[in-house]
Image (tube, rainbow, N blue to C red):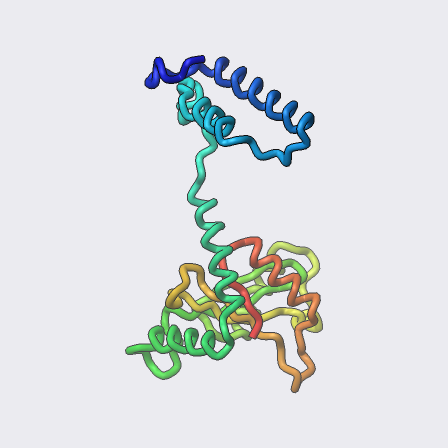
Length: 219
């Protein structure tokens, strides 16, 4: 094939495939014979690139319906992963200041007892993995709401001694530098012997990460 004679022409699909297969075979044979390291010469690379770049894309490959479209969800997943890593690498003091700044903005012009609109109460049951985000910031009230919802869908209601397994937290919305809300979970209180076990923490964090709705972290 004399490339210089028709610089604007494109090879058809079959010609391209045959040319590349032949070229790859020749290169493989040369490497076996000469003990080369698998790096083509400058001339061979030029030929390979020329063939690939001069190909006319068939109409069936330009039909958008045949392509797998990169969805917004994929973009969101990528953003979520990067923000999760950003949060994980943050210094605890810097994170505390960031969340306090969010809280201050949320409470601006609100009454003394209001957390504002940017902060939401959170409660999750590690057993059923049912959870609730609420405008109520009281863990007691949110736990009651969540238990009522869980009990409405099961025959055996949650017993009083099971309520200690629930995990509470606070959701921070519109945190500067983050698109995804940050969820700070409470590891329990040692004074009352209600510490969240390590395996429970891992289970809750793993589940919430899979949902990609929050950036979860235990205090």
